[in-house]
Image 1 (cartoon, one colour):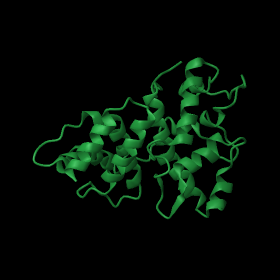
Image 2 (tube, helix red, strand yellow):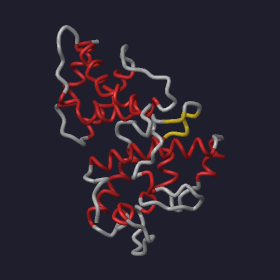
Image 3 (spheres, one colour):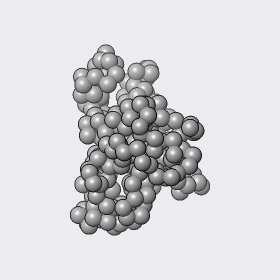
Image 4 (cartoon, helix red, strand yellow):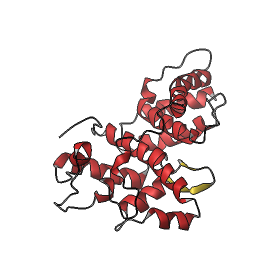
Length: 233
């Protein structure tokens, strides 16, 4: 296993970021990592969210991993757990239910539209919002158009499988890639209620999964592109 992990890590790091070859090698590495014994576990219902955030962190930082004797596998698990433990701890934080500023872009009420839901729109008319909402709703700016397009491409390609592997425990079909395609990319976007009926899942459970897991993953990707949650217009 040590030799296989070493080979996969080397293969990932030898390819340029965002290249197809790197993504293929990264997917093979993540598959192996999923089965490593010793990864931190939790019975928290949102554990998959913490795990998927960790997979994304691995994807962005694997080149910084330095194996230590006597085992590549053991040192890799230790390195991963150093991040995963904190993500699990976040799940139990007292303010865990506080909404993310990025989550606030979604209107939970039927028919609501968000910045992400308007990525393909080129209309100059935007909702009368304030603060960060007003800033990111200005999709006519070149930077926001660039980020919007990259997010669309990311949703469709899901290069590391993070979105499609983040799903409700009882419904693998209710994954973040599928929900993003239906609630963001589809024109007009589907409503939460219709998606919940189609997948036979509870409406509130679906909304919670979308806000706490899917939008959080999209936010992290947007931040990697230069989006700043604290930036003001």
